[in-house]
Image (cartoon, rainbow over all chains, first blue to last red; front, side, top):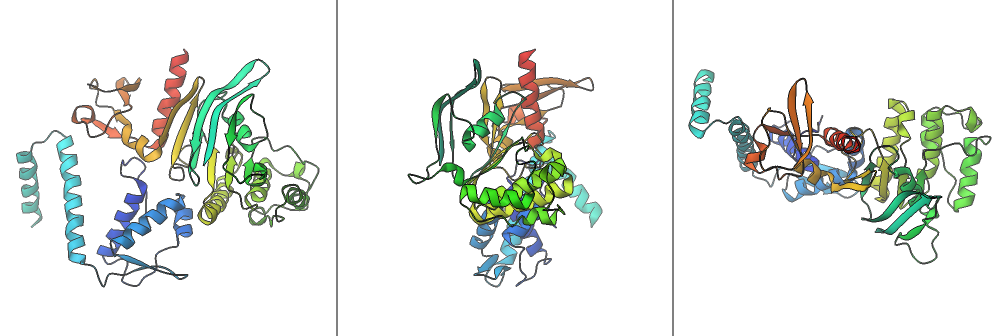
Length: 123
Length: 276
């Protein structure tokens, strides 16, 4: 379900947060569904349980999940602004794209040009 | 916290560990790696209390009067003891010796080991499973695992990691593992200590280490960067940059992040380059 990119310089707990956020934003994980337990997820991905716990804590702070004592951790989107989160995710994706495009040595005009050309083709 | 102070160890006149200082936070998961004969296993045995230091000391931070060995799960690289006993007998013996509950040997049972067969008649992998099963069942505060997993097939290794992760989740022990197969524990460890022949060569948190190492394979010469290693691959120059900030535009053009295996392989190469 989730995948860790070893070559990424993004820390593992953040990769996990982003992937869970994405599944929630895309509707793949619905309001009220239970996330795997810390032990289950840590075992299946072979990652440190503290890392999973850290991701879950952060998701809880963001208001995307809620832990219920003894029952587990559940997706809870009733109080969050999903559109706001979608926009923030879009900004993240765009930043990532820009960083990669710039690392190829493209300047901003070239990046814009390439992008609008593609959108034109797409639409 | 475990505090290791000015630790030295010698076999006769041969110095294996020289004046080592190290602090391990409690709950931390640490990988020790490095070339052969760097003293990794010796350090682990010293931490396990199986060897006595020639100089220096290890403070485990346990309450006064605690025998550290009763709080430590140690999986050594030599598993030859208790050869004529069965796993069930060893579990009982171990429990008596350490004053802990007898092990249920659940992992070993799940791995299909016959618990009434003599240990010397088990395969190497099964011996490792039995021993791990016993030491992890003692509710340890500290888990020390030497490089023994290579003897175990991938399925059983998976079981062992599950068991270890379970203990980590339940008790949050300090874990120190010696590993030469980096990718297997890449996301399990918080911190890497690379022991070279002349002592600790690298000691960094994994996240920081990954942020500080980059591979330049564009063929360009690095500018303003610390070069850990220069090598030629398929006729093309490659540079492993360490430490570098990663945000530094000059050093990062044409360079990429590296996974832990690549980084530590580079340290290993650099270690052998220095010797030749």
